[in-house]
Amino acid sequence: MRRWRRVDPWGLRQAVVGLFVRCGVAAASVVTASILREVAGGTDPTTALQMFGAVAFLAVWLTFAVRLYLAGVYRNERGLLLRYVHRSRLLPWSQVTGFDVRAARFLGSATVRNAAWVLTRDGAWETPVQQRSRLVGSRKNTGPVLSAADFDLMMARLREAHAAAQAGGGVMVR
Image (cartoon, rainbow, N blue to C red):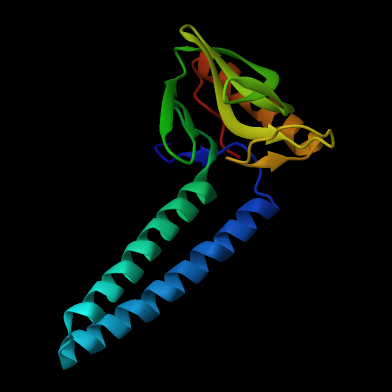
């Protein structure tokens, strides 16, 4: 199994972000067609600069939207892939020692939401997946926010995949 499989269940957030990605792709198609029409007819420098600005904005929009859409925890036979909005981290199964639920951290302090943490031989890594909380306080919105039932399901899947990898039988695919 070379393919990465998402561990955390899809939710409303991914549906909304997916809609933003589709809107961005549609806007990029319209802008690209407009640019091609203008270039074919000859254009002045001011119009060219405006077109460049529109393309740059759409590129940033789509990059951020796709990264937000893909943020989460993925697994395959090699290990875990933690996808954040700004980076990704690969943790081989040989380095993973377990999983824990701790407060999510934002700018060095704890938030009101719990997050899934991957325990490794080198320390603990916070995943972008958080558990929904009704408490009032600081939050960070950089990944999926799951209900308690979905969060528990994800943690069970992580522990099951880790046990299968440690047993040498590979990771089960569902």
